[in-house]
Length: 546
Image (cartoon, rainbow, N blue to C red; front, side):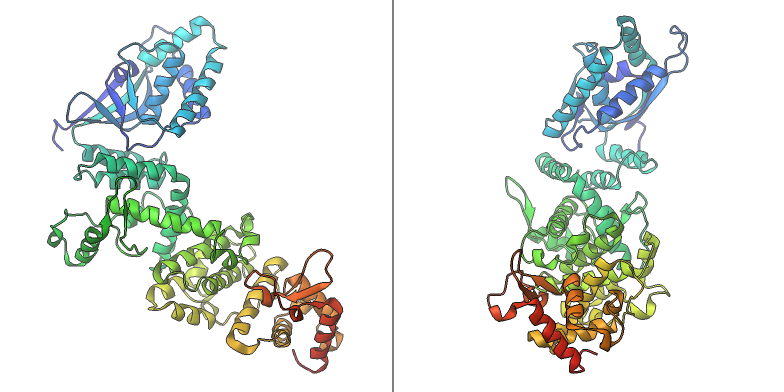
């Protein structure tokens, strides 16, 4: 970096705000809360020296990084725009802005809302101040406060300073650093409209993008490589896994090294732009190298939509596939189980598609629920150990992310996971999850073709549930002689294996007949409670179901 490219100086707020500043369209909206603004006012007021005439103890309000546009007439704020906008807002409320103080910024609904709310909070505070206090505050803000102003003639250098400034602190989410990096990689493309579209969409879904990278894509990247994920998720030290190939420009693919060439060629060949919302038909894969720039933003949007579809699960085939996980989705103690479930499903779908949605969801639920049931106090360290199969889990578990990554077909994953020998969990006090796990585990045997009729299903259920201790856990008794059809019916109904037709109806049906989510039309599948009890007695008395 040449000396003429970077200028670093300490300047007062008066000097800063008399510059021709603008917030570029690729920056995030104004998001400071009223609490942030009032805290800044309090800090400035408290910083004033005892002697107002003293020039000592200037108050430093952070760093502002600026890019000097090629026209030389305006300065883009690369970092510090939230503070600069707030300073303008405070001075506007104080009626202290003069005609030479301007700040150009793009308009959006989120920015307007925060400007309105913060201005109202400032006015409420200032209305409680007497005139002399207000004038002293204006003087302190203008001439007693300062910033470190860093100006660059090159946008790439300004962004590099932005990365360095924020990677050392905790002000920005790692996804903000990724956004800045990949915007910088688009500098060679003279398409500011495209940048605006990408940033607008990114900011619109910021609340979804942060967990997408911080939790799901980050953990997949770690666990598929047999590496432990950090408890806090993606951080500034880990964002390198989402930086990759620099595009050489269409037609220059041979400038890439051999391993990059196919990815770059495919990107150029499959990118399609429209006037409204440019999209791409490029087929992403989670564990392929990231292509820097525009491709990264398309990559983020692709998986954001997928994850949102999973989490909402309000359309087929996901509605039925999520029946097992839904009852636990909003309880904190199941957080890691739910996240593991979605992470498995996202990775599997990315590699093999959605054709086996129900089977994959059952496999992911059994895998994640077994972890929750097998650990009384589930920390993230325990999740890492479970997924990576440490000594405790090795003989009855599998590294599912490696299995998905190394398999050629989805059926191979399902087959391998179905063969995992899991020790029955008999000491869990989480009956709700335990019952649901037993139901899904029994379902595997039913799908193996061992039962099709109602009687056959009952055989499998009673046999499996006696072996796994369900009847003992329900205090029915441990010996077959102590069981009656009425007792077993009550346990099966409580566990959800048998369902009631509805209020006022005396009829019940096996849950196994209702996996489609539709009430069976054939009335032979519906029986009264005493009929079910009699059928179960018949199985027990015949010596079946042991």
